[in-house]
Length: 121
Image 1 (cartoon, rainbow, N blue to C red):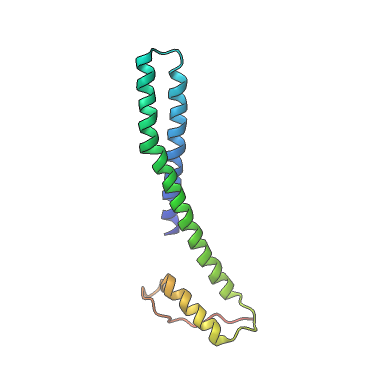
Image 2 (spheres, rainbow, N blue to C red):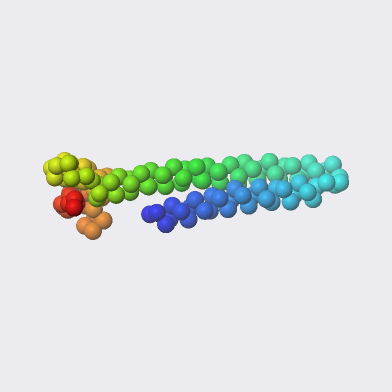
């Protein structure tokens, strides 16, 4: 999931930046052109912005937020693995089962809490 999310994020980056650089080249080529060519070039840039640049930026924003949410859950699981000793085992088990129910048990495909809570050293 994480790799696919990063690939989609990178595609959004390529889509938005590639279209912007293309529009810069089109604008440079339009200098000194006839009025008809300038109007045609501006229509291409306007349409391309609505079709390529804006969706690319939206893909960047959405995948960035999803990646941040996923990183937050991983940070919580790392905290659970290194929880201080003053937390009781019962409390750690409840929190750990809640985290597993949100992420799912990757081995069995179920959402049940089948593993025990991590022990502290």
